[in-house]
Length: 314
Length: 314
Image (cartoon, rainbow over all chains, first blue to last red; front, side):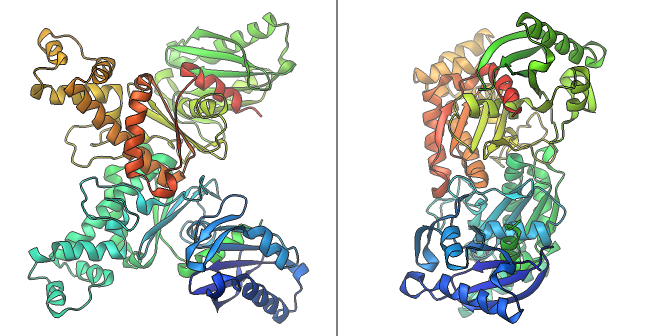
């Protein structure tokens, strides 16, 4: 029996999944990410855990067909990490290093957002599609591009970074990246709260105005829930977020012409309520031959990176 | 000696190039495109010409390693044409058909804009780069995407259609595609003339205002030349075209993160004057990790499709 490990390294935890050759998840667990001493213990901890998992399942390293690992930073096609700030890591070839540390087993690495996209393509919302654009609406907006079933890495590992696509050149607020008018300023959880605070003065009848008075923190989930309940301010904000999302996805579609767009991340939990609005905007702005796209909600949540990691090993 | 044919089928002429295995052009010619009887003679005429070229060079079909053919319409990855209005063609597999008509020689087909991009990547402005975005500024705006040295076709053959990327959702004029605010409305030759006519009433001192009075047709080249001579109206128009071009290219770069952007088509003949403005706008709107891009003017002109066609045969 050959097994494959999918490993997703985050700044707080490392998620590890053991898969069979049919990409089916057999076992999963998490360990803490030890970022002390510039993250120098992280790979050692992962190797120890993989060893334990093999033993618990009466397997040896010979039974392991490979390790696919996702990292929170850019990774080149040949396995070089160009720095992972959250882990304290600099530049090195992680495929070579981890393989040396774990019995010469085959290792493939990728950026975590790209692996999440591959995971969704293989086993989640993008199943059955070959050209998938994934967008993740969390604190920020990330993404990944799958063409002909494979991850597009891009020259500096920055393909799929559609959170920083320019969508509004009238914007005066500055994005976390230093530019103005990025998609992330409207469609991320942070962006939704930003828009709400921007418009709140004009909507004194909104329940959210009470939050402002009482000093209660407004969350993107509050705004989404109130939009569903037809609060005028919240509807305005979510409509604006969906407008820019649809535009950015239409712009992306004119570049790569995907057959499926998968929307993930915390904000996407609003489900069809959000996706319907995004799709409406997309259909308005997309070039006709690019409109033939299926919109899907992501299905794998935080496990997407593990699935995508395993998918790198073929 | 093995030769490869690169064939670029347009609505008026068919360009045919004979290449050696090192992608070096040995001979080229043109024949008229006979669009009578729903274009049913086009492939026959091509075969006859290929036969003649082989004979003139004392070669036989056995010496031909393949034919790469570009068509003015979407072509799927497996060689199916989804209709070429300009040729009168419907849906069929051109790779199979042309191969059957020409001694079973290997045939590969692609969209003409995509093949021009591949041609520039192999032998033109994009030489030495693996991730190339090409944009062609002609009557319309077309484009092609090369990732890891290969054409990205997209689900419906519509990848690289960045002429119809939404860039301005305040636009009230309608694009040829039926949408409003497409890049093509600003950055094509037609778009440049449109913008000039839109602003001309405010610039009575511009030489172009004389054109208006005398009923002389304004061309994009006039506007470009006058912008170089610092005519205020023309500078405003070219600056606006370059602004949207830079934005659209920055948006594209956040999707595929290319290392080279090649600008071709009639409007690109303005050279560095235009490219410098586009690059400035790109640098303002592109996500920092995507800014590491080289801008190049296209070098192959109308021969790009032939070069790209030959490049399909490996």
